[in-house]
Image (cartoon, rainbow, N blue to C red; front, side):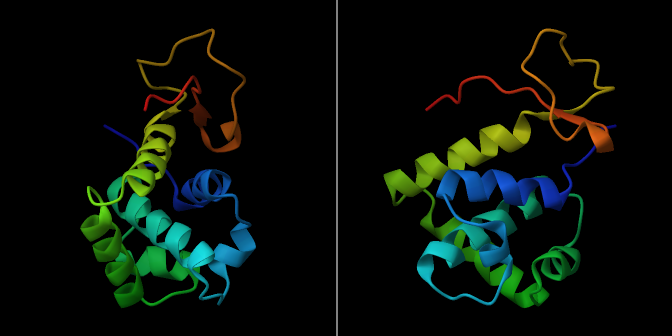
Length: 129
């Protein structure tokens, strides 16, 4: 059984890559520097998160149709913008690197764990481009 990554762990990864504050991404701001990472977080949450579009919307303070629109925007943009693709791929690799501690593929010797309180660990390592 594969455990899904909680949405609240996806947001900090996206915010770090885009260099924005999580409160701004979850807030009402409509500037592109906040909407782009917000939509990527929606997309990642839909792909790897543990909840429905409605639950993702609740987490981000949005309606499920807004989440759906954001997911569609990211999907449409992938493959057309190399810089955007690279950022999204970096985020995907970081999210996928989150593994349950009880995962049989868990290896001792990886970098210091984060988010251990809920039973997950970031395995780290260099991001492949």
